[in-house]
Amino acid sequence: MKKHQSNKGFTLVEVIVVAVIVAVLAGVAIPLYINYVNDSRIASADSAAGSIATFFGAARNSEARLLAPARLGGRHVAGTIFTATNGSTVTIPAGVTVTVTGSFPAGGTVVGAHTKAPAGSIYQSFNY
Image (cartoon, rainbow, N blue to C red; front, side, top):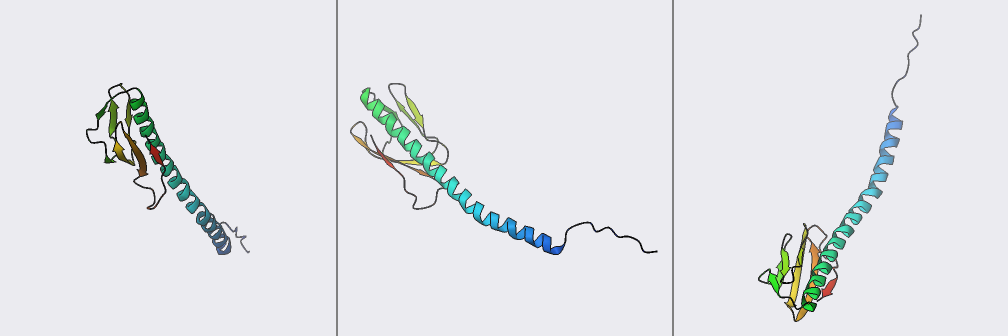
């Protein structure tokens, strides 16, 4: 008597077809995801720089003095807290560096950059 053999599993062709489909989807999805992440990092840096410029403008309009940091001009890293005598504060978020030019209260510009964004990314410059 001949035993009836049950075929369980997938053929090699089926496995290869699925692998090719997954590879094509990954080839499309991964670059899109990387662009999405970079765009969000750039937006985060722009938002931080805009918040700091707004903080400077509000402090200047209320005739407040800048208490911290002691050195305004130059590059400030994440965690730096800007404080004014009117009680307002703003903190640079994680992963962002901010470059301040000019002087307070005379005015200048603030530019934010994300430490993990690609080199050469364009950032907005905010005046205060």
